[in-house]
Each structure stands twice: as structure tokens, then as C-alpha cells.
Length: 124
Image 1: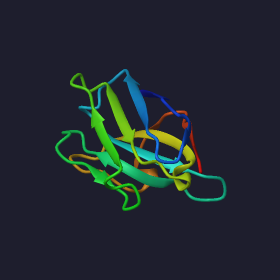
Image 2: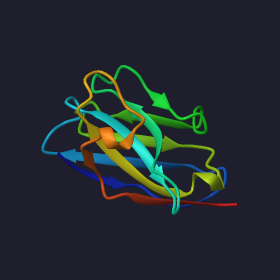
Image 3: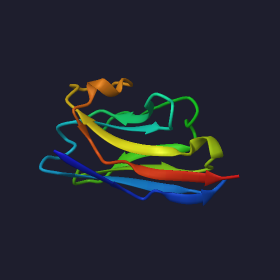
Image 4: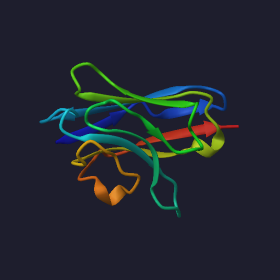
């Protein structure tokens, strides 16, 4: 499956962005979906994830209550709605898909497919 992200950009603190991850070749019905982010000099960090049945959502503590993961009815696109953005949310955001049964993983090595990344910059 190929993943293509879009929706990044520059926003002021307190603003919102919506990231999209479009899958081609297969749908997210077959894969757990997750968003990770990375800043220079740091490890890639889990942000949010959803198992392939779409029945639950997982978030890292720093974004819970501000970010929401979802997917469309056709299960070909996963979204990350980001509200109340903070400067510390600045990073390159990556979409990932993995064969993980009905669970997700917070470990990036568990995901087989990755998008190219989209830059999110939040100014103070």
C-alpha cells in the first residue's frame, strides 16, 4: 500500500490543521493506522493510532484532548485533526500502516508502510 500525506503547514499557536493520509492499493480495513512525528535529533514519536476495525483510538498524552484520529467511510483515508496547536507540536508528521491484527503499536518499527511526511510548524 502507498500512503500520501497532505495538510501540513504553518499556523499560529492555538490554531488548527487537518492532516490527511490517502492509501492506494489497499484500504485501511486491512491495516492499523498511525500518526508519528519527528523533530531533528529526536526519535520518531507516536502521536495517535487506530486499529484496522476502527473501533478505538489511541493518543500520546501530550495530544490527548486536542488531536483526533478518524477515517472516511471508504476506509481509504485517515485524518488527524489537530486543534489548539502548540509550538511543541512542530515536527514532520508521518502516516503509517501496519499489519497488527486488531491492535496498534506505539513502536514505529512495527509499521511496514510509511508516507513521505508533511511539515507542521506552529509559531508562538
